[in-house]
Image (cartoon, rainbow, N blue to C red; front, side, top):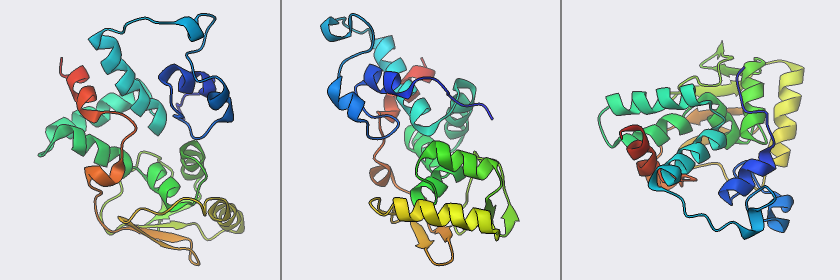
Length: 202
């Protein structure tokens, strides 16, 4: 399962935002990593700025470059605004939906849950994190004590997060449904998706 396994705080400091979630370390050192971090005044080129926006999305959703490029190409071939379509594809990945439902405490944890076979979609076991969930698909925890204990524990720990309006969660049954595709305003992207489109179409 290909994924980024390097230092996460360093990545967050590079972009000046908590890419992987809240970090007290980032609050203490809110400047770029490296010995010249606090004094760095480099002016970034247009290419560097666009690259940074693309990288934010990649790390946020836990994708490698080849995977993220494939998402862009898929969005480009569909009707509608490419940037918004790209966001919708990312948000309706199975691992992201598992995280949004609160069945996992983070996207990496959700990715691992899916890969280890703890989830079912429409009654069928799915272990592919990038699985594209469709409207009215049902996502549920597998009927195994280990799976249910893990999901229940994660739900208890994610009570501070609100389940998006485009998802419906049944906490008792550990089951969720994708009721509709989210709009751009509901996604609240971590970076500018239009800049990413410009980066790839240059």
